[in-house]
Length: 288
Image (cartoon, rainbow, N blue to C red; front, side, top):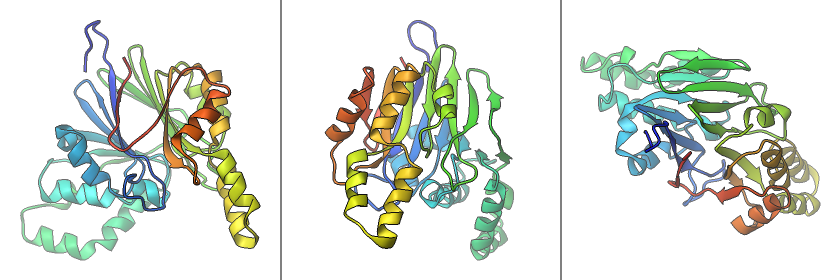
């Protein structure tokens, strides 16, 4: 998409802004990106396929799928999307799939789980396995790919005990969009978020998480402590966005913990003076 100045802007649609906990209004984490003539999907949580139908008529043109990590809430919608495109013949060759180490094994096991369905459909002769199984690239920190009008860099983030978790930085001329994936506060995210037009980051309301910890005991208390330990808090993301000189911070994967969007914004505002938006499913943004 080219703006009047001739630069290629990046358009973002938040498909899902939720968490593993089912929510009628917030589906699983997923982002739909349009750059020039290319259409991209980042993560594919539950409900992604049906959010795509509402988001854009270009959903059939998705060329690339990027996975941040292999937690179920970021990948469980992948089978829905691939099978829909395969059966409805949206493509001859499925979108390229990029993700962390383990992505290829995950896809192979997914295909095995649907083995009977695949056998029946291919025996009918109207589809072939080559139209279902994507080409897969497993990446490490600093991986890059360059296309005609844009480039992308995958970078490691800290979502321990997840061994391999990534964020992605998309660049088109002077436009930058960064997707954090799931992460705690880490230097690599700040580094790759430098001067981003838009940073999409996960967030947990810090006070709400601490209240949950204080009011719990035993295994439940340990669970809340663990969740806060490997996710980004509302106070931390404000500091990171300020240090990285982000123009527009968009919050997603919202762990509100009985809080409100205003609570998240108030925390971010203690250190970040730029634009901040609490994301909603199907919200759209442009880099310029």
